[in-house]
Image 1 (cartoon, rainbow, N blue to C red):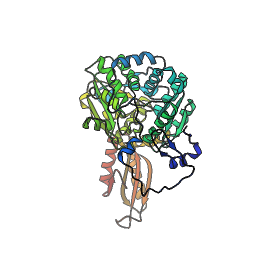
Image 2: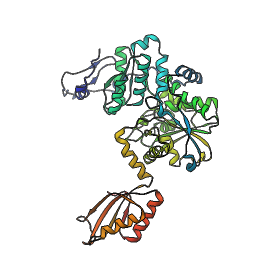
Image 3: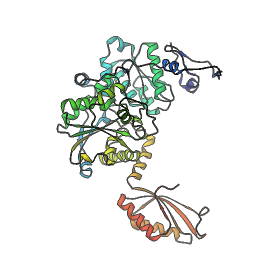
Image 4: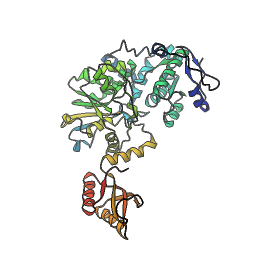
Length: 466
């Protein structure tokens, strides 16, 4: 049996853990520096150490059928929320009839509950009794833990060391066994699959297991019932499970509905897979939409979704922040970066063909890290032209700085931060550089401030300043 690392030994465990053959893990009693001068590891040997998920075989991908989505809808009915799909007041200024599918209102805060519950309920009794295991840094772990508790099925989740503490604690509260292991989700997954092999647990891939895809597709059935004459549906894309299931459900009933996927520019793995014709590795980088940062899309998800997707768009980070801000201000909804990516695509102007159309946008998750929310709001304000930074050189004689603050007060601009600097200024000795961060009503108000400053002062640096 594999010893579980104690929480106070996590760092030692991470340093000492080495992957052996497919059915063995060694845990050194102390940290050693082995002699690797004569060690040669071939690519074949490295590959043989990796466990493969039998449900997600790259050589034999499974394209899920509509009948499976229908079965999932019947089976999970009563166990998950039938979330609202409300008309949005943003429709008036975005030029399209927008409806938000509010999946962040599920009990654990995301659409992941649909697939998790269906997969757990579909297991044979003997496998339910043994339990399941998954690797996840967030929403899949929460959904599996919660529904495992409700169904009486033991759940183990392996989370990387970067997983938010709030989500780790929530999984524990739902009765799951939580193991912190791996520098990233890839390492966590390999460790989870090794545990599955050792303990006879069923490994559940959070975005590519066929039952997961079918469960996520139930969102599509709800959408066409709630907005029967929908023209297009915009869905955030990470590993591809949600768009695969939802596209299958909608296109099977209404083939003319456009299915559009939205990805973050920091990890556009599905767009890359479409380009090369198969799932391929895409290097992810830090993104507000961390839930979409999946380096390789699911093979089953790709096989299911590829013929059904009409368009993929790649969204810039500042528009994801702006989308989160818009949802807080106008919809009174707190949505995570991944969940807001569909709206971000509209705000960025990537979908002009949808003008005048009836559009459903999936808000697929609301588990934004509380500590990051304030920073995201500020970035959204900056992207919206309502938080401005500039530097202006003014007279260092009495009244010089007072004059610029008086000017901003007359324009109705609120000063958030102000700092003046003399030593490194290369202008005349009777000048001072004033760095300001200010709040304006909107972009037009910011433009008015810039115009006034340039009329009054000769040296104005507008925007980002080092």
